[in-house]
Image (cartoon, helix red, strand yellow):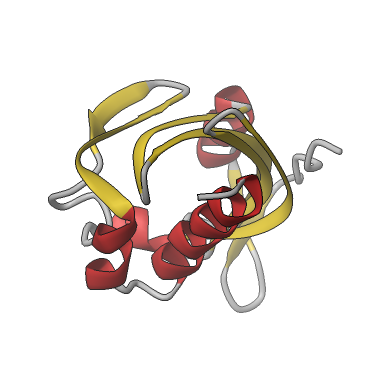
Length: 138
């Protein structure tokens, strides 16, 4: 596969995730693919996509760069079910072998997420809203 095709494969992975298409997501991953992120490591298959928390994340890929079987994708992630919603930016480094993804390392400001999820809530007119908002990293 070319560097362009590697980048397309990574975009396909994110697209399948966003559409909750477990079958398609699994076809781009090697059977032994591992996903690591800021605070956790686990096998990529299984209940990763099917879990309610994971399926709430939506990734907008902003840019990709590919070289030597590795693709770096910068993205913006949003979650709607987290109290008041959540947005953060990060990047993933993805290793490709043959036509499959074999490893994914994802990085973002996990402290920002924790602050957002634990910030005090105040009663709004229709729903609970954050007492203050945490600006997204730029």
